[in-house]
Amino acid sequence: MRRNIAPLISVLAITGIAVGSARATEGTVPADTLFGASGNYSVTVDQNDGAITPFAPQGTFGFIALAFDSGGKLFAAGCAESDSVPGLPPFCPRASTRLLMELDPLTGEVVEIIGPVTDVFGSQVNVTALSVQPETDVLFGFDQSFSPSSSIWAIGKSTAVATLIASEVPAGCGSYCSRTAAFAFAPDGTLYHVFRDPRDRFTFELMTLDPRTGAENSSVPIDYPFPFYWHRGGLAVRSDGVIFSNFIFLPDKPCWSCPWTPLKGALTTIDPLTGALTEVGVDEGAPLDLDFSPVVVESVDLGIKPGSDPSVINPLSRGVVPVAIFGSYDFDVADIDVTSLTFGIDGALPAIIDKRHRDVNADGFPDLLSHFRIAETGIEIGDTEACLSGETLDGTPFSGCDTIRTVPDR
Ligand SMILES: [Ca+2]
Ligand SMILES: [Ca+2]
Image (cartoon, rainbow, N blue to C red):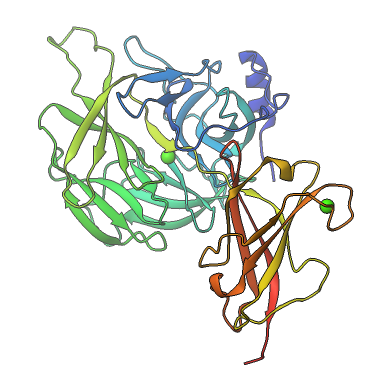
């Protein structure tokens, strides 16, 4: 469903950005690249020293929030007509329509305007952070800046329609609700949030929240070198669980009429157990929201005991089970790193690999047939599926599953 985007399209025509004509560039971004939203462009951030590499500015667009989904699609929230004042990066004016967009992660270009972010009644939702829940791939939006308290929303990735999950975060906070826009899912599904106590504006806590209710699960005070820092927003968790955030140095304004100095941000890590903040480096421009590119696992077509349907397996057998990885137009089995193959929940290694790449299913594409010792796979009586995973020679992970039936029956 696309609503009311005709006026936006005319705005875009003025900005000279060819939205909709650009398609995602071929190829993918390396996993665990740190992205940030900053003014009218997006950036990548060096995780060793905080240095930012900006993508080309996107006309008058303003970017506030961004998040990758598990397939590597990059979503951004922002506005079509950002505003700017000297010394500060472009920003989205209060009243401007909030848009959900898709960006090309290789170029930072706006690929598509999905639509204005509104609730089911058509009211604007002022999204200030985005993050995708790993197990469901649902796009979560968090708003904070213009409402009395933080809220959690689920946002349709193709409609931009937001469904309220929780308001007044953390749940039950009364008038002491959080005052930051920093939210991010960890790869294990934990929802982290940097909480700012409204009674004490220099106190921050790293909180974990229940993503279904917004209730606080745990919190630890963030130990930071007061008074040099101010939390800017931006929180992201790398695939190894390390939490990155973005604090800013308090702006230097020596006199009332002096201009603001450009914002200087500090990329930091936060220890979830102790709350200790460690500075990684200075990132000029101070991204508002952060996210890591995901480890995109390619899906392959798998045939367990190819040619037999259903694939009957006796888990008590001392024998081997043949498993075919079917090649296709997109997937050449000659590219498989055969030393990386594991099958079943216990990760059995291949006992035999047929290096002839025969066309097992006679579809014209060569396939890779390998045999695994059933006893090493971890397949149990009653299992209905088994999966194989591996990597290509260039290190791209792939996996595939097939249905099975076990004998003897229970
Ligand atoms: Ca984010
Ligand atoms: Ca084939």
